[in-house]
Length: 124
Picture: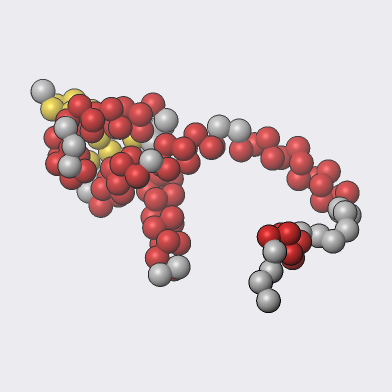
């Protein structure tokens, strides 16, 4: 017998409305702590930016031209994505003559990408 959409939805929700007031009162104010964190995930949700960030976990520092070749884009496109990553606090850069090199901002960014990749591989 085919289950209706409503039957499926009902199975993964509470059948009665009841909550633990102590837990809710303890946790609810802390939820505001995540304000702004969604921007990190938004930046990394773009496939191109995630590829760039992942490339920077493999190689500590890459020139904009290297990144463009790795992702198969123009240097302008690579620069655009790298600038966004920098503005989001995920990457940093340095200039050396006419070249611009990017690296990850800190170990936390490395860990975010590494853990996400490890998690994705678990499902395979």
